[in-house]
Length: 345
Image (cartoon, rainbow, N blue to C red; front, side, top):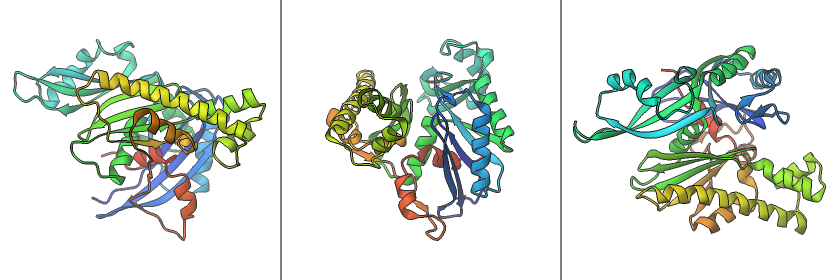
């Protein structure tokens, strides 16, 4: 592992901003800074920045509070403005692919090709010059990237890397866990308003999907059906108060519904893929701590479910960080950790 300059990993979610800075040497990563700050409802909706001033103020305050010295940022995007496609193309070199991808992408992108930024990565090279190669195509609307960059500039930071949530999650997973070469595992990140799913087969992302369920579903149901206010619902959702039997029953119902949505998405993948056996599902995101959710997913899929520990192989200075706190937020921090691993070069 080469030593590199730290970069701020900034996960700008619909309910909170999470900041992570890592240092590295030849053998390991170490946590330098971590913090998160809640955002008011509707500040970000489906990845769109609805209140840029509130978001930039939160980012500026986080960086200041945690005495972050670097200004360089890796951020990520998600939502309907992001398109991820695995496609087959005739065999060609990387330089030829860079030249031609714009024309090839037009048939897969539901937006004007002039309105998006494109990136491409060869997943599986062609076995022969006459066969096809598998390529991962990612397109993001330019206006979305520009909005995020403007918010970061307003916060006094310098955006250098733009990633996608599902791949930042994958980066964090890969440095913390070892997976057998032939295994297929599933990474699920459940945020406030949506869940992202990434199926990893033989070390390669083979399927990604976002579904419109998230932690807010628990809060909204508790408020609507049991007359709780927002703070009361959040406390019960995050297991910070002992639920009554009535609360628990409702949490179980919502967990069952979310597990069902995840199962249907993975059933779709299994129906279109020769590889339909999942050895394990790893759960991340703020809603991953809801007590009944992991068990409901296990029951639905018949697959072991584990919460991702995003600092599992990252050195934590116990004089600087409370180990209990770091453990408690570890699965929520996954995207921020994955972004902090990025390097501009």
